[in-house]
Structure formats: C-alpha cells, structure tokens
Image (tube, rainbow, N blue to C red; front, top):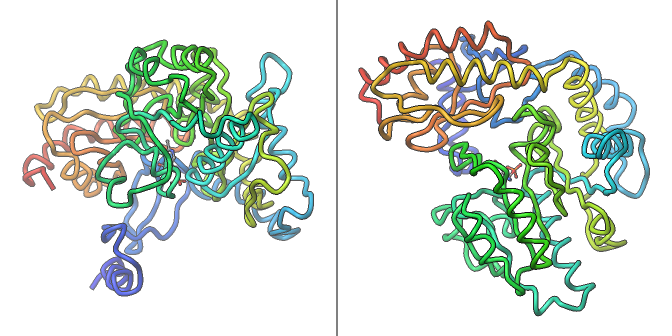
Amino acid sequence: MSATEVMQKRFAAALMPNYGLPQLALARGEGCRVWDADGREYLDLFAGIAVSSLGHAHPALVAAVTRQVGALAHTSNLFLHEPGIALAERILALLGPGAGPADARIFFANSGAEANEAAIKLVRRHWDRQGQSRARTVVVATENGFHGRTMGALALTGKASIRDPFAPFGIDVRFVPFGDADALRAAAGPDCAAVFVEPCQGEAGVIPPPPGYLRAAREACDTSGALLVIDEIQSGIGRTGHWFAHQAEGITPDVLTLAKGLGGGLPIGACVGFGAFGSVLGKGDHGSTFGANPVACAAALAVLETIDADGLLQAAVTVGRQLGDGIAAVDHPMLAGVRGQGLWLAAILAGQTAAGVEAAARRAGFLVNAVQPDAIRLAPPLIITAGEAAAFLTALPRILDDAAAAGAAS
Ligand SMILES: Cc1ncc(COP(=O)(O)O)c(C=O)c1O
C-alpha cells in the first residue's frame, strides 16, 4: 500500500465523508510546487482553491508567522494588538481613492462564509436601526452564485443541490440570473435589503458578467436604497490583476467581503463596511473568539506587502494573459475555449469531461480543478513564473489526449 492509500484508509475511518475521498495526500510545498506523501512532485495551478497567493513556504509568510507565533499567538478581542490594527489600515489604504485610505471599517472573521455572515448581520442591523426591519426583508442574490456553507451564506448560494437539503433558512432570498442587469434592477425593489453579488462567479466556473454589470448593480442599489454587498472572497487580493476586482469598474460597494488569498493559507476573512456602514455593527452586535487572530493578521500583512513589493498584480496580468492565450491557442477536440481574467481562468471543455481532465493533469504532474463538469479552473499562486505557465501549456495537449484515451468522464 502506498503512503497515500494508507492515509486514505485512515481518513475514511476517522473523518466525515463530506469531502468524498481525496485522491492525493500532500506532504509539503515550495513555491508553486507540492509533493505528495509518496514523494511525487506536482505544479500547483490551483493554490488550495485560490488561497495560497504566495505559493507554499514563502519566506515572507514563514518569517511573519514564525515571528508572531513566537511573540503572541492569540489575544481574543478583549485586547488590542498591532497586526490586527495594521492589517485593517493596510486594507483600507488599498481600497482608498487616490493616496488616502477608504472611509470604511473592518471586522475580521476566520473564513469566507463567516465574512458573509457578518455582512448579512450588518444588513439586518442597518434596517433594524432604520426601523425598517419588517419592510426590507428580501436579499437579492444570483443564480449559481456561491457565498459559503454556513446557514446565512448558504441561503444566498444560488445552487439548489448545495442549498435545498438544508432549507429553510430564515432569509427571504430572490435569485436573479447572473449578469442580467435588468433582472437585478427589477428584483431590487423597495422590499430589498441588500444585493449580494460576486464580481465574477468563481464556483460556477469562473464566469465573468458583461462589462458594466457591477456599475448597474450599484445604480440599482442607489435607486432602491438597498445595500450593495460585493463578495470578493475568491476574486480579491490580486487574483484578477487588480487588488479587488470591483475596482476595475470604478465603483464602491457598501459592504465588501474577503477571505481566501488574504491570509495566503492562514485562515482569515474580512467584512468591510464603507462610510456609515462601517459603524452599523455596534458594541455587542457581533464577534468571534478567533477573529483577527494575530498570527493570521501577520500572515495577511506579509501577503499584502509581498504582492506590492514583488509587483505581483502586474505578474497576474502578464502570466494570466500568457496562460489564457496559450489555452486558447491549443487546438484539441476536447477544448472549447477559455474565460476569466488574470490568474483566475477556466478552460472550457467541449463535453462533461472535467473530472477526467483533472485526473489526467494529476497523472502528468499538474494540480488543476474540475470546478464544473465542463470547466477546469486554474487559480495558481500569484508567484507563478512564465516558465511554469509554459510547462503547463506544453503539457496540455498531452493531458487532453490522455484524458480522452482514459475515457475522460471520470
Ligand atoms: C465567492 C465565495 N464566497 C464565499 C466562499 C466561502 O468561503 P469559505 O469556504 O472560506 O467559507 C467562497 C468559497 O469558495 C467563495 O468562492
């Protein structure tokens, strides 16, 4: 039995089966490379679901985490600490117009779903403070959108197979087709408390909306008075070549949620309230024992500093274009195209063959993700080099041939 098989057996006996049985046991990583428990090397084009923005064992992340855990690993929110304040200030500076920080305030959580739970509570508390909690009851969200697995975030998740087994939720959600500005305008009526939207749908298969969609959502919310909540949990922190994807449309949300790439692999989420919305959650309204954990905050500071110092936004644009153009140039009957922006792409397949392509890529030494039956998601670390991208592009026709020969579908 291989080391991986031994771990699979132990996993199946000790852990709930909600993740199925993972095919690979990862033991260590360095840069964009990871090694499995049996010593095989892979190029990681997936970064643990768009999380490991600096790749694996990045010296800046290792140093920041080591320093902080050696100084103070946890304080609770009954005490101030420097990394939490500095991180909030840094994020506000990145969100600000021109040279100044944004007029906004931040709540730190431990995950994306928790960041969205904070946003849902912020929306509710806002309308409660306005005396309109019974009038503004509806949240508008998008079909096939994904906002997390906790009960509030799940209620807004527009995929029936994920949501329906856990209904009811206690949130009245009106789903609209993603990218349809007219439908969004029509849904955001006087009963609408908030609109929750991703700038580009990640779990649905890296699906960008038509240009101007976020601006239309902003206008619809301005007209109705509803809050615009932008979920940048997957799209944020440089993945699209912008610090935050919504900045490309020149709009400001009322609430912004972040997680994934922010901590570079350490668990952290953030809910940003702009203007007056930054002060809606008052003393006692919300909290988290681990939220704003100093080690996670120190990691996130190292991530933001490294993205800035190493020019990784520009790299995301350049290497992203190389990857996207390279995939588009591959002439193969299994491949139908490519979509996405920066280092956040989906290779679109001609059939429902993604699981087979993911497995063939793994056999060839590349980690990619079958995000949908007909789409392979690439969300590599932002430090991926042109040479590493080229290695994948060279291997891609062979991977597709191998998937076809193996019968592709699974
Ligand atoms: C857009 C978006 N929102 C929320 C989440 C949930 O984040 P988490 O898994 O950290 O709870 C995800 C996770 O994939 C996501 O892509």
